[in-house]
Amino acid sequence: MPQTTRTARGRVGVMLPRDLPAQDVLPYARRAEELGFDQIWVVEDLGFRGGIAQAGPVLATTTRITVGIGILPAGARNVCFTAMELATLAQLYPGRLIAGIGHGMPDWMRQAGTWPASPLTLLKEYTTALRQLLRGRPGLANGRYVRCEGVVLTETPDIVPPVVLGVRGPRSQQAAGEVADGLLLAEPAAPAYITASLQHMVSNTPSAGDREIVTYDAAAVDDDEEAALARVRAGLEAIGEPDWAAHIDPLPFAAELRAHRAACPDGREFARTMPADWVRELSIAGTPEQARAAITARHTAGATSVVLAPAGPDALASLDSLARALPHRP
Image (cartoon, rainbow, N blue to C red; front, side, top):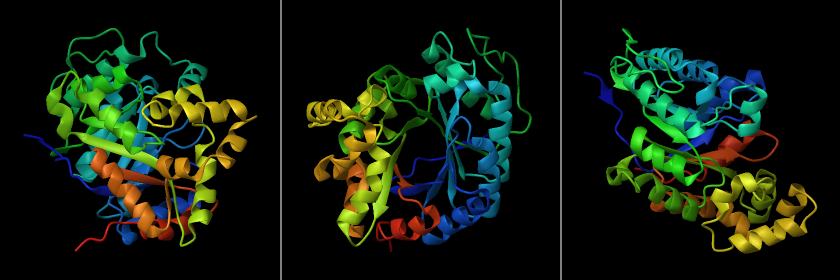
């Protein structure tokens, strides 16, 4: 009987930057484990590196750290073959994998010719089928998009990896409570956004409150708070655009932020001139103590894992500074 990974709380992870030079990918992963991070998350953005292809070598070069894939777009792969890939990784590295599934960025998916007429229908069918197949159960009846009826994986893991949905909208987050093992919240994931997202997830499924809530945030740690805030601002350049509305709406300064964006000629100027208090709320930045407090605030709001996305030109060097914000543990 396959086991399901139990939700662990208070975890801190780090993101593997999508544009990290290839020769630095595995040293970065090993260093993240040495420094005591609980998780490392690989990303799959169109035109960069594949999520599953990164996860395998990262798992192989480390021994303890959990590897998350965030996210695999549902429209990009046949669910049967995604299940086979994830089941293989979970067999070889038991208890060390988390799989993120999402819609994918609409423009990228349209460019690739895989944006469906009903993204939510596809996501729910895909997630339901994937979780069924990973448990060695026969694929359910064919749906509008997903066809896997009667398919059975003969090689399944003893510990089934959690499948979390990387989604923003209220209806998609509600679906995470219905068909998935939790949520992955892209940056910025301020505490107010985490709370609102958790409320959406449990609105139809009250029991979903004990599931995974993974958050991403741009992060920089420095003894000089101003230097850390300056480094992280570039990671906030896009958040005034309409696609990020769900992240901004729960914030007490949402209207002011929109007015500020409207007054700026571009995202760069918007982020450069953003009030420092907003930067602190929308990132994990500052001295080690300030960054640690920001991590704690996200855990308190409901995050089970807080993932730091290193800001600045040298990701490998940033790892050591980010590790200074890790909670003190016995």
